[in-house]
Image (cartoon, rainbow, N blue to C red; front, side, top):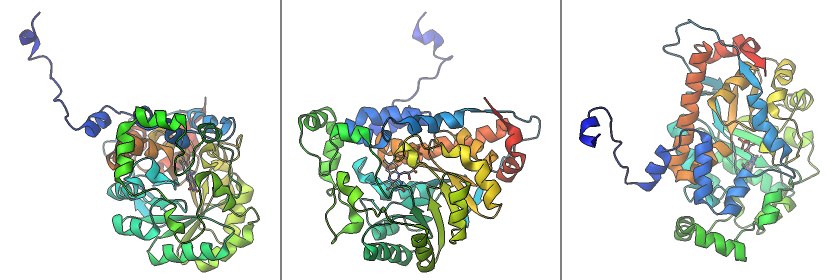
Length: 400
Ligand SMILES: Cc1cc2nc3c(=O)[nH]c(=O)nc-3n(C[C@H](O)[C@H](O)[C@H](O)COP(=O)(O)O)c2cc1C
């Protein structure tokens, strides 16, 4: 058989000349973005994103926990126009999703925090800037003007610095303060220790090998400003392995109450893992909680947050915002979390894999993938809106 004979039966896909677009068009889920990022990025950097604490028990359990639920769908309810929009903490978003804070984001790609925030803006989603960002609070605000920006605070030993950061975020019109409470001592990141991850990178033999193996990454990095802890300029120099010295292991709920009094906007406590700490957060004035085990990067063997949603919702009632992160890799995970009582999910690695695979366009791709998956899951579940998904709730789920 000759090609001319079957030409009318097949369509030849046009060749995409732009390498990034070509790579991204071959990614159909978050795992594809992860695999692409892994090919392009030096091992110590990829592992910094991908890895967890100690034996990575929680890291693995987080994704598995979402997949333990099986759906019990309804059918024949006209799902031609499902409304996927979410409403939480004063945001109305096309999808019940936020971008979680991630430190050192410019190490993955120079687009870094600003690129991720712009992608979030294009998708109408909130972006949370980390205390440990490589771009300043003010620069992200001007690079992504009009985005729904949240600021994440690690409470540090230097009380003056905490106040300065919070005041700068308020002045730059960040809308929500997210206070992380599971990182007063840094977790033991086994892969980082093994890889000797330090900033600036130390030219060990393995670093040199990874430079040779990933020239595109290093060319990009060398053409862009050096990576630094942008929000601490003028304060003590910090290295990636020394960040533990910054955090204050003596913090208590009183510190959250103090921040509550200082911060004019909404306040979320990130890191409770059950009803008792969620109740505490509300009692000191938090508007919401972000159930999280830090993506398995802090206390290894910490419970997957998805398992705590129902009990937390029962405890805090309907008016407190409940967000969930750690392990979200698919739109179906968002549907599971909402059916259990969450208002929204947040993602860390899912968008970082996109950033590593294709910079800002890769973050767009990750968000497109999750949005399409969530919509299709809603349709196949037989639900027409997020409130309907929430009200049908656990009747849609079977523990598999
Ligand atoms: C590379 C990386 C850096 C992170 N940096 C921070 C941070 O600076 N502040 C913070 O509160 N959480 C940080 N986190 C945790 C995320 O905000 C979020 O809780 C976690 O990534 C959710 O799990 P997931 O990656 O499975 O989505 C980081 C996570 C990753 C993967």
